Amino acid sequence: MEPYLSERAVVATKLMVARTAANAITTLWTYTPENMDTLADRAANYLSGDFAAQYRRFVDQIAAANKQAKITNDTEVTGAAVESLSGRDAVAIVYTNTTTTSPVTKNIPALKYLSYRLFMKRY
Image 1 (spheres, one colour):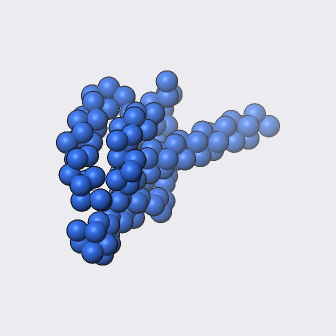
Image 2: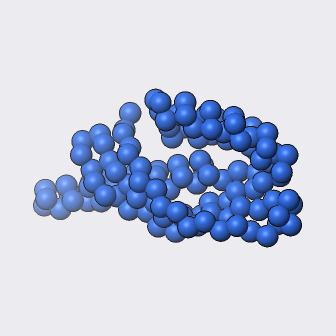
Image 3: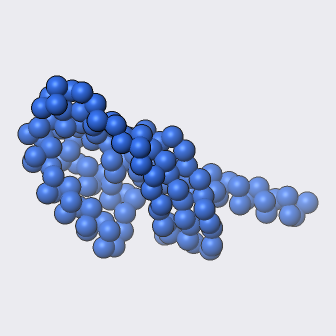
């Protein structure tokens, strides 16, 4: 019975990691002109260390131009999986479709199909 319970715990952990990774990517790359000012704060729930500081600088650099151009970025996760688990560390892969629109481009969507590899740590 014990190996079964252990396996279920691993599956539950992988599911939690995949969901967290998907939520993180959606949060980092989905924004509108109206909520661009709070993007870095929302993303801070998922980031730490140097990358959190880099991301905040990046958002600060693009915020004014994106708001002026009224750019909307909508990221939809199409798949997520856990590559590895080791103690408090995990590596996840997230596949996305991102649509960017702006009145500047007559709201003709620009589509991006991207994948992300996330190195995650439980705190």
